Image 1: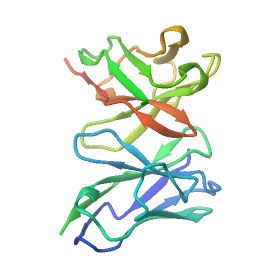
Image 2: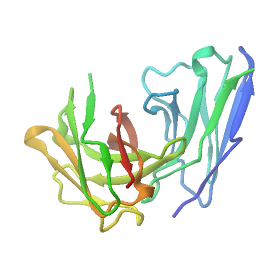
Image 3: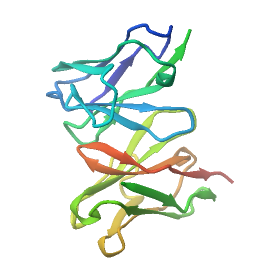
Amino acid sequence: DIRMTQSPASLSASLGETVNIECLASEDIYSDLAWYQQKPGKSPQLLIYNANSLQNGVPSRFSGSGSGTQYSLKINSLQSEDVATYFCQQYNNYPNTFGAGTKLELK
Amino acid sequence: EVQLVESGGGLVQPGRSLKLSCAASGFTFSNYYMAWVRQAPKKGLEWVATISTSGSRTYYPDSVKGRFTISRDNAKSSLYLQMNSLKSEDTATYYCARHEYVFAYWGQGTLVTVSS
């Protein structure tokens, strides 16, 4: 199985700040990487697919990058509504696997 | 608008069975792979099962293979998860999702608690 290592596990940032979350795959996943946002008490929502493609309706302050085994999610100009847990997911192989999540809080 | 509504969760004893359902609307259900993804309390996400458009192909991780069965009824736009020989570690919120390589749409989830 492909292991997805996400960092940091938690993050505290101020409004307007830029935030970066990293995801490391245990083998090359050829950009088959998605990012999800899960707000407290809600279902996950797709943000990014194919490592860098923004899902319809997602604000442009979110962006994804990376290739091979290393990927990142960037949030520019942090807003209060961005408080959530973020997960990465690889879909290059079954079983599809997720990172453990990064909990983003406001400072 | 895509809607996925899960039902069937509840409290069940270890070793017993439970069947979850998911009612889909707002899209042509028969055109999409569908999946179940679960989340243990305060934990991360785990893919549980996927089914092809016709239902002829199914996929499972080792953690549930042989115990869980995913199925669908395209005429009813419904997805199912039959869970047998349940264990305490199966306690989680179970989400129905439209599986297009990524999980593009999710339901609100149904909580399954396995406890004596």
